[in-house]
Length: 120
Image (cartoon, rainbow, N blue to C red; front, side, top):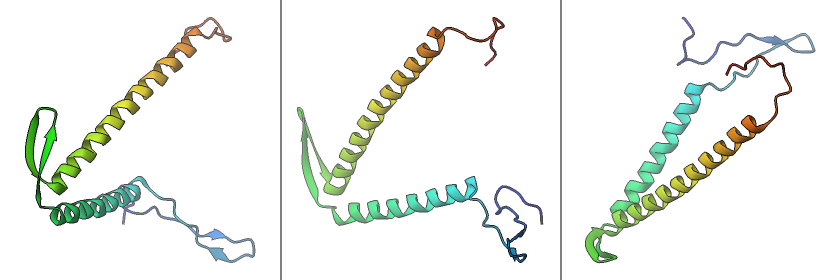
């Protein structure tokens, strides 16, 4: 059977110091990491579904000059998504700032190598 990306890597026994063969533990693969992430996401979605179903009573939400009637679970979920988006925007701005600083540091640094052009 061929070893493709979806299967676990084939490991050969490594001789133990005492002379006996002890199997080596296989390294985790990207596919196994993806499966773990999918399973965690499924558990989180189940908890969110239970939360929304248990908090289904309608409530009136007032924001600035508008108002809406939503189930409480949905309103809280929308608030959490809004907070996550705000954190993502601030994080993205900080990453761009750090990249810009790193790029300036590289271009401002005097070259100590030969005058030949660098390839990136």
